[in-house]
Image (cartoon, rainbow, N blue to C red; front, side, top):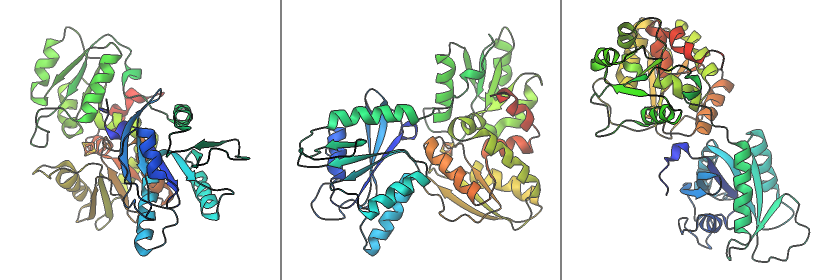
Length: 389
Ligand code: SF4
């Protein structure tokens, strides 16, 4: 079953020159005809994403990319898209069909090392009788399926070694009391379901054998009264941080879904250190607001309305905002501050790449929950549950 969302699946990017058989290899690995296969160079334009179960590792996404040597004008744009696909890749497969490696293939390996992306070199040949293949190359015939089961095992072992999944919240739960989750059901809430961070956190608490009580902010007092003891932790949507902080005893630990995601999807130390930059925001500064999904903007939208109003108020004047959403993230960064959402719809690798890009450009990057905690005066309290991690 391919039910895991793409944002929690490690991505494997397949790279190679035109016509080395990347698309055929994707089809062979996934057992499905998903990538367009043709002898015409440049058949793959935008990266093609294919979700599959890679046993014994688990759910992954295979990413088919354009040919490395496609030099047409359109091809250069395609190569840029490939570079973007690499931002989310936990592992790359360089597919080759001849030896020695060509300069463009050597350059690709150098680029992967620079980006710190682990890789495997896959020699795809219709001829299984190859002399002197380097020891760490995998030999397959993607057209006949020869070598595919062994390659799957090699990929699974490599992913097991390189994919790190930081905890959500269960490692911070040591008490007996229930955890209260405060979930506003406003106009922005999706119909009939909770959003991904809320579901993931709830499941994490239950998996760890703790009890959870879920309520809206308007029923928080009823939830508190219904408990026989104190909650061991309250986790709230950042939008009602202040209201929740005021409603619960000051010594009850409190944090937000967004701060939990900052640790799980990115780097809590890096994102929280960027709060220091908030004091220096001045009128006319350029601010990038990045949301990792696309949704219709609502009257009280957090990224479009609430956070910009808070920042304008603090800066004492108008600010120069840029908004990006979904998979979009600028290649060139020229901002005073980047404010990112909780990033539940992109992979951890993509979020870490964005953080690294911001860090290289010397631009502080913070997330919604940390910004709201800072301006609500409860930043220290909301980080307290993660002390000594
Ligand atoms: S805005 Fe960000 S945190 Fe919120 S649902 Fe979309 S991806 Fe997830």
